[in-house]
Image (cartoon, rainbow, N blue to C red):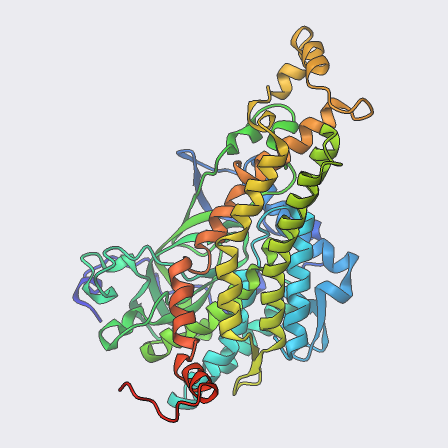
Length: 510
């Protein structure tokens, strides 16, 4: 244990909640409305715009992100074959976002579901990282147990059975603030810049630190904290994995703001572009948060941290197939606005739509291929082909930007110079706008405005986070994928192929 931790004030009272008591607070969720109700009345500390949020569920800026998660429950009811699967753990159908990957086909169905969710919400629906966390924990706990004789895998299975039975949402707490990137976790001037253990008792352990850019953190029921990078022996206190209820004592959420998010506070919904659905990113601060031993899945096994991150990225980088659902919306919006403008018959318009579709389907093809090429791990679970998963994510760091550029091209400059909804409803300004912003005679001006606002929302506004910036930095920024592609490209074997065809018998360069 590091010296700094020994002098801290600890939150623990000796009467912390047990694992059983924590689960007793949850009620099984069946519908989207059940999900929204499950978020009400929680004792959560959340700050937004410098104020403490009293009721996140009904906050106009936060609620659209909850609606996106609500849609993951609604889809299970509307299309159970796509969005649910039979779980051998509880012998019942469960939400696919809680399902163990038993075959490559499970990964393919996951990808199809993710694309469909993107089409429905037009934003980040915040459950993919949690699903990929569940997937990686199955194999990594099994492997740690095989080496060290630990009880992690059974703890994981016990937790997952209850998660499936209660139909909850788990958030992925992987990204640490990191501090000075040139220093290891144990070398940081402030040890809290990486999540670490501060105390161990007979009942469990305590962690301190923060998880940044946490997608849907506030909207989850549980958070899984895990290492963010490879660790050394001196980083053992930072090698921790554990399950924490999202309303556990010691958690503080600071809500990340997004471009144009205050439009949700204005009257009317048109200017928001997508008033129903939105994404969410939070900084989650852990101030000596207690984790009972039953929910601890790694404690000091530092040599497995890098492999855990590698497997997680294999799952999660292929999960960025979700952006193809958003891409489908972008193609549709660009085609519709061209139609409303009366330009849909132009050859250059059709060609740009073809290019948008080509880029979108290229992303989809690499993800689906990664799933079809999945391999089985010793624990029995299947994992995406890592090379193709990294190719998928690297495509995602580029292609959505070009798709967005082409959508803006087809939308025209009016997209960003539109007056507000209040101006359109004004007794004097309104009729003038109706007259001069008319496109095709049969298309109401309001429809044209709504479609332009949607494109603005997804390429510049609050949901541009989920379509563009998250595409760039989520699951690792572009260089991270290039490093993994370099490691997996097996260039020496490819040189052998070339030498054989060129009739060069041996390797001549040492």
